[in-house]
Image (cartoon, rainbow, N blue to C red):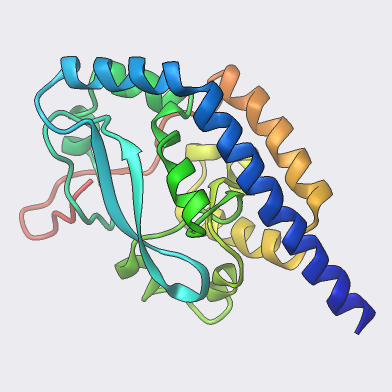
Length: 211
């Protein structure tokens, strides 16, 4: 029981950390939010924000928010990232993706309890349905804005490997691990390491699944 209480106390501390840090980011980063929103709007036609259904804790579907990084309205669902979608990324969108600034609106998801600062990245509901029982262990915790997979390779590693790291994170979670991931992610993002999606699929006439 002591171990159970320790885990529950740790998760409560993690949630408190999420709330405090998200409020600080929202308040201190307000000018950045405004500048990014204006740049996104001026860069191409379409809405400032992009929202999409994702699978979160216990597989519950929630609406995740990001700054739009593609010309026009991105597809609401995608199973693979295709060359045509890669080509639709705007110049400002590429900058936002490289430095993770497109994820800033997810402070709202954190405050609502949908997400955590650190955790497994939330997949699309259609992708979650294809997860094995072992892979579904990643849904035992709230999904994160950043993840252990970001530290291990970011977008340069295949999806299956990313999921393996998500599961490992859940199985070995601690606040110390979260702090280590935060620090290492900051360094990786500032250096723009592994910022480009390596698993870009070619278009096929009968198998276009979005971007």
